[in-house]
Length: 118
Image 1 (spheres, rainbow, N blue to C red):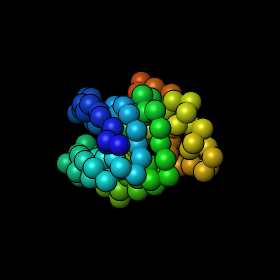
Image 2 (image 1 turned 90 degrees about the vertical axis):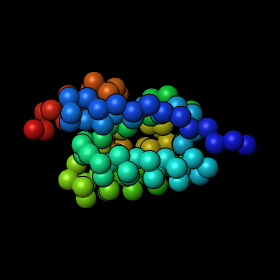
Image 3 (image 1 turned 60 degrees about the horizontal axis):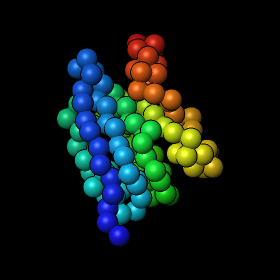
Image 4 (image 1 turned 180 degrees about the vertical axis):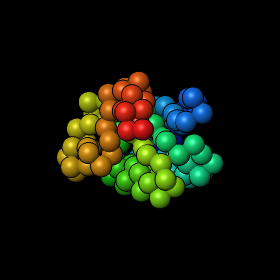
């Protein structure tokens, strides 16, 4: 089995870091994923939008990584929004973390939510 998590990265309006991921967020991909995102959070800007809309599978390691990234972002003075798809949403709801992970339906919705909070 190979590690199968890929993604793109961009900064929008010099305020939001947007990560768009595809593939599997599981025990195999989690260590590299967590390290890469934490490094970007530390570099700033601290408002993170993590798009999992194209993720095929997330396991408990992936959910744990998301929780740790939210905490890391909050400790850095930022926020994190998670854009999801029905499969990921179902997994997150099973462990009752949908509010903590700030689930959104699109990157545009996540940006609008962050702008409202200003």
